[in-house]
Length: 275
Image 1 (cartoon, one colour):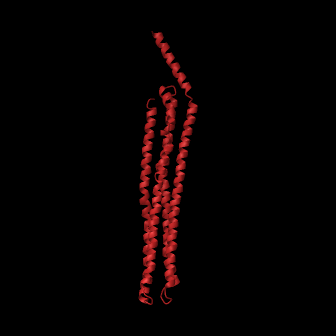
Image 2 (tube, rainbow, N blue to C red):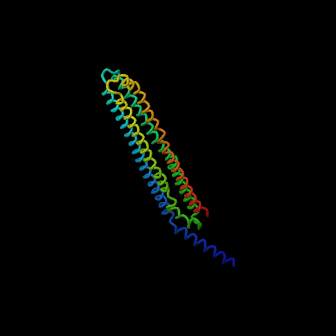
């Protein structure tokens, strides 16, 4: 009876050894590395598309800003050319007025800040968690390999290759935010169109003065710098719009990554829990 039990145990050990040898751990580790690299490549491709979208948004806004700048300056020059020579408004006065319009350029640096800030948020909320996912996968592989003779490792090791565990799943979190960039461009460009309309209103004020009405024209000349300053200030105050529009996009990305990370960690735990 004892001899029979010993023989049975030896047979089971032999079968277990045979099963361990049947699983090609070298090939499995290669496949796992390849799957990780493929997932990272997908993530990198999504990040590249995000950069293109950010650049397109930035370029669209700065182009619109330049358009407003030129448009308002042309309006002011047109008004100046209509003023009677006798009026107290020199070319130097016009240049001073134009310099106020140049303040619109301050918006460009802010647009660059928004772009850089969002890239940093993607680094913090996507790229760093991606490294943790890769590390957790490799740790699971190491744990299974360290118990290669166990039924747990034999049965579960290949599950590390399933798509559910791919770090590439995070790419969808990056692409989720791309529509927010378009919304930023559309919203700001719409506001800049209002800036052009405001410039038209200011320029047309001169038409309220009848020809030869010196006091009316002089009042327009006196008030024009303040009117233009208010117009420029309103445009610059649009700084809050991109951040307000894109902030929800940051939260969407963060939540997406958190859910996918939790799902992958749960799957890895199920794979290694039998060790």
